[in-house]
Image 1 (cartoon, one colour):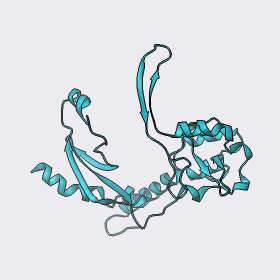
Image 2 (cartoon, helix red, strand yellow):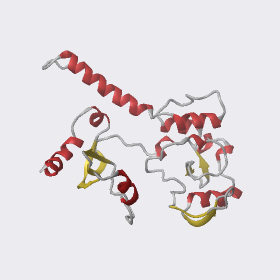
Image 3 (tube, one colour):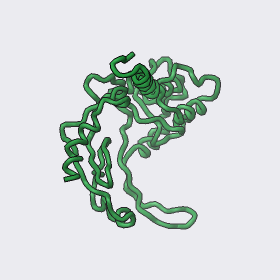
Image 4 (tube, helix red, strand yellow):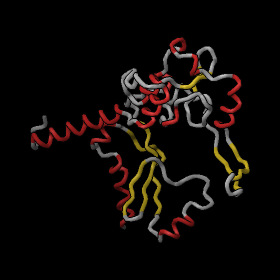
Amino acid sequence: MYKAACQANVAEWLGMPGCLARALPCDIANSGLIQFSIAENLDTLSRYFGKDQKTTPFQNAGIMVQGHVFTGKAVTAPYAEHVALGDILQDEHEVPRAFFIRKKDLPRWKYLKGSKSEPRTVGASGHRYHYSEGAMSFPAPPDRPSRPTVTGEGGAAPSRFKHVVRTPSGRLRRLTPIELERLNMFPDDHTKGVSDTWRAFFMGNALVVGVVERIGKELRKEATSQKAGPGKRA
């Protein structure tokens, strides 16, 4: 009875028009919600939860009540604003030469971005283990949202985690400090005055300030409304 009541109300809870829902509008996908329990002994849970499963049962939204999980896939509401990686890119002629990937470095970039399933050895101890990871988009698709920026975005060395885009002329390059600022919704050249590596580090540590701003505006509306009193919304 308890779980049935929760199941009936969870979709409503997730979609309640609170501050976050108004600031970052989303819907629960038509696939609906799934539920399962993790109300077990922690040692048992750590050893056996998800064993032999290829994918996690957790979606990107949900609620847990007394160990009972209700989870579903939240998708951006159709009326919400969308910004793709390509929307923040500078024109190719504005990008300094240092940000373009050298031909001799391309094999290393492809290896790091690609899928792997290989034996590895820990140098100090000689311990051998099997390492595997999936492929990442290379280059990053300009018509989709970017991945989060990381503190290691700076520098020319090949990396699995740095963004790489293809220019209209077909060349591959890293993101500039201005583009990293734009991804976090800062004004252009907000970090100007230090090295490009430090600028990238700052943006890898930064919040997406536009998200904070939108939430703050909704919190202000909520606070103003409550202060005005019932029936006197400001």
